[in-house]
Amino acid sequence: MLAVTILGNNSALPAFDRHPTAQVVTMEEQLFLLDCGEGTQMQMAKYKIRRSKINHIFISHLHGDHYFGLIGLLTSMGLLGRTQEIHLYAPADLKDIIDLQLKVADIQLPYLLRFHPLLEEGIIIREPKFEVACFPVYHRVACWGFRFREVRPFRRVNPEKAREHEVPSSFFDRLKWGESYLKKDGTIVENQWVTEPAAKARSYAYAADTMFDERIAQKVSGVDLLYHETTYLKDLEEQAGRRFHSTTSQAATIAKMAGVQRLLIGHFSYKYEKLQAFEQEAREIFPNTDLALEGVTYRV
Amino acid sequence: MLAVTILGNNSALPAFDRHPTAQVVTMEEQLFLLDCGEGTQMQMAKYKIRRSKINHIFISHLHGDHYFGLIGLLTSMGLLGRTQEIHLYAPADLKDIIDLQLKVADIQLPYLLRFHPLLEEGIIIREPKFEVACFPVYHRVACWGFRFREVRPFRRVNPEKAREHEVPSSFFDRLKWGESYLKKDGTIVENQWVTEPAAKARSYAYAADTMFDERIAQKVSGVDLLYHETTYLKDLEEQAGRRFHSTTSQAATIAKMAGVQRLLIGHFSYKYEKLQAFEQEAREIFPNTDLALEGVTYRV
Image 1 (tube, rainbow over the protein chains, first blue to last red):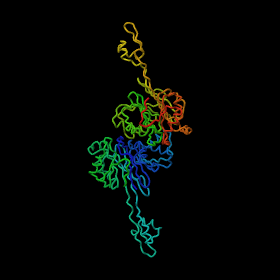
Image 2 (spheres, rainbow over the protein chains, first blue to last red; image 1 turned 60 degrees about the vertical axis):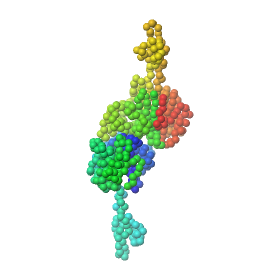
Image 3 (tube, each protein chain N blue to C red; image 1 turned 45 degrees about the horizontal axis):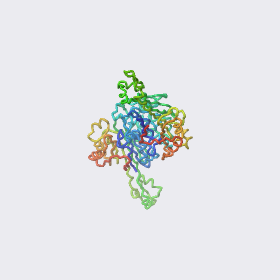
Image 4 (cartoon, rainbow over the protein chains, first blue to last red; image 1 turned 90 degrees about the vertical axis):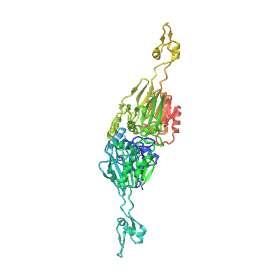
């Protein structure tokens, strides 16, 4: 499963019971936290997100609505007796802030907090079954997007068909790599007779906060699900640009250019109580668009 | 009016929809924020606390459950265009944390944040109609209690009676100070004929976080309302002491020793889902005790 659960969908000012940015990506039975605005740990409790399954946290940039909840989450995990290490990917300055806050409270976390400063574009986690990359987006301060991608290089063996063709199970690993099997009698069992193509490798990309920039379309090209911020409706395009944010039309244009399957929009300004217009405007350009709603899980 | 509204009544870990510590004192048509745990700005929205009426903020100590919501509140006030200055009373290190968080976000607050480091016991605000003092409490890191006291030095003039006795209104200010009036015919209008005693000066004291220490009783002696932390029930007295916290019996004992009118208890550990036992145990020693409940305003 690859899915994203929204914990906060509002921009800087919490309003209308909408919270600052936080999302949880579920992939390979792990949880990955994307940004951590104030109140994220309470939102996790509300929506039954298991903190203990989070081993990786990503902070896009150091505006407060994307990280003011982090120190509370980290210290709560410590109070709960966590010992499993956490990997934190964030702009370098965040380490100084965390260190200072722990120092003045005379606290030592009972687990290892591995800090990975985001310095350049590229793959930041490479595991056998998935990888995570960061890429620049374009905001008032240095800001990073993140791309999650399953890795599915192997053909899937059909064990019944393989046995029918007398392929021993010791050869199954080689079948996954696409090899055919040479039987003792000299005949060949063609690989495609006993395997199916590799499963589709799903992908999710997160682009917040950012102004409209076509380079983003290239970075998220072809992902199944794209989250792109839409702080404003399209009539405020000038203001959006000035504040390094995006409108509905701009997010939808990026989704279209990038050829993604589906678009999720969020980071709504506190000026908007109702959100329907966001959906309508984005769908005019990119029909397969949904609002990022708190507590909702979007499966890829 | 002197009153306190509870925004958060839980200790370090938010749980059971209880939040970390924050309170708002209403006095002389101003709001005074006492501590500011994570989510305080959302709690303010929920309970309709007007941020614009807060000019003074007090942080008792630098454990996160007492201040992690401050930076979010301060930056939100900025985003809302506040220009009125704010006085912040807190341990000195908090300034470094705020400065660093504003610097990395490249933010300048549009209002003046006047930082007053808490260094020694004594009066920290002295206004014509009220004063606020700080006093040490006893926790694992330096921690301060706060005492709010109305100032009501003046007798109250009864204008009808004063006119009956032919006291000119130009003399009313001197009546307030207790003077009697000498009429032109040589007779005296005794002050108490035309005035009433000064209104009672109400007081509130806040003692969190602290272990049991009899010196606190002296600092809060005779206040009308005392808030004292009770992280644990009385059976965990040993644990409370080790963690520099208090039990129900200990808080009630301080209230009794100090001769206060009424006791409010809070800062409940996340280990307790139900709170009735807190009230019961404290009332065994100090009957006029209430639980500090979120969203409730306690008038003095």
